[in-house]
Image (cartoon, rainbow, N blue to C red; front, top):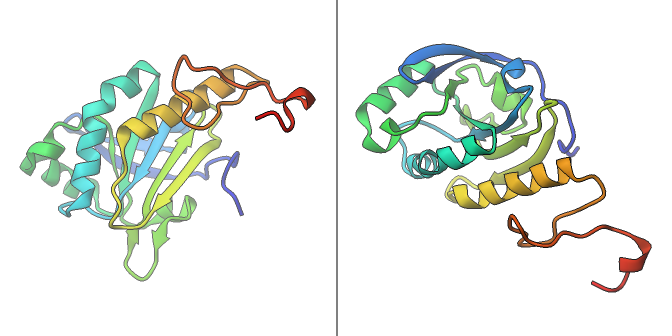
Length: 187
C-alpha cells in the first residue's frame, strides 16, 4: 500500500543533536516540513557521503522551514561517537535519531529484518504529519541532497498553490500546470 498522504505512525526516540541527547517523536515532526532520512548504519561507506551532502545543504533546507532527521538503527550514543570521530559527520547540525529497536524503520516500512538495518529511505513529511514524498534506493546507491531540495520545493509549492502541479524537472520559478480539460492531449 502506498504511504503517500498517510499519517506518520507514533514513535519516541533519542537523537544526538548539537552536542546533546534530545527526545524526538512523531509530534516533533508536526507543525513544520520534515525530511526523515533513513540510512543503514554509522561508520560505513555510502552513508557518510549522503549525510555530509545533507549537512552541506542543510542551510537551504532550513530556509524553507524544513528539519532533517537522519535515522539509523544505531543508538544515539553511536551517533555521538561517529560525530566526534569523523570530519564529514562532525559538520552535521541536524538531529541524528537512534532507532536501535527498529520501531521507526518498521513504521516507515524500510526495515531490512534479516539485517536489523534500515533501507535508504527518504520521506518528506508535511506540517500535518502526512507523507508527501517517498523514495527508497538500494544500499549501494547514494542520494543527492540537491535533488531532494528540488522535490521539497515542489511539494511545498503544490501544498500552497491548490489546483497547480509541478511538471517533470520543475525548479523554483518555473511554470507550473493547472490540470484541466483544456490540457488533455496538449502536453
